[in-house]
Image: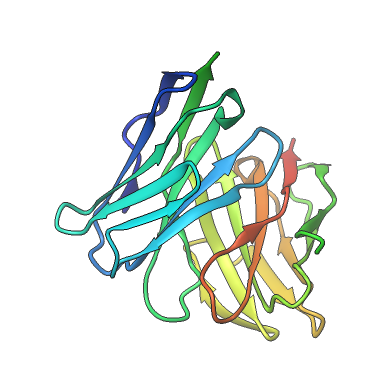
Length: 113
Length: 112
């Protein structure tokens, strides 16, 4: 039973365009969501997070949107750069002091120069 | 500030052996979590330690165990290794009051 789903295993985008990565979740108890980026042979790197009390959070080129009613979140990268090419993981947690992250299986983003 | 470090980076073992992996968290971080990454299952939570106590545990058999020392460093042990234990084992640390976890580079374990 996959509680966090990233339905697109891969995505290709032209440099300079917008990349949109999607994530769906089934557990309504999740109240904190994160995006991580992972390069081969490295651990995941934290990108951006959002609490369930918000519907948008921005950090530079990265914006995360949360639609609680649809149990859906998305990561927008504008403009996309070749260095953004990596696997992106969506993760979720719930409960105060809960440090157990539930991850999606990742979306491989390729930014084409 | 130094990041999360994990040793060793690569390890080859045979079935039936046991293995111990080490993780040093970011200075000041008191929570350490362990994850297993495999191609089929993705990233799965193993357990989390805080102040030398296990606070959360994922759905893994008892062959997987861990501990945390007073300096917050953590070790993970897998006994009676199986072929399916071949994976990337990731450690992450966080401050107690925050939920953002910062990951180390991982230990790649190959069981033959």
